[in-house]
Amino acid sequence: MHQHPMHHHHQAPQMTQPLVVYPVDPCVVETLQSVMGKRVVIETTRGSVEGCVAGVKPDHVIIETRGRKFFVRIAEIVWIMPE
Image (cartoon, rainbow, N blue to C red; front, side, top):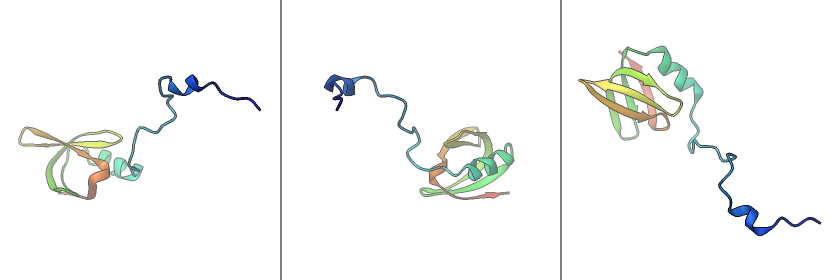
């Protein structure tokens, strides 16, 4: 039986761990991409955000309201309502 040397485990972490902690529904990302540049109301676990979809990333969406940008984690989105 082959024993791995102990120091082997203290190297830099390998990229085996997923970076996204919460599961993100790819359908939500597609929905957000389909309303790029349009006004939406997004209900999150912290309340609702209203504005224009300025950008969509795999884990968050950028909503622009009156020149201010909000970065909303997709995992926090409850529902999306295009205006």
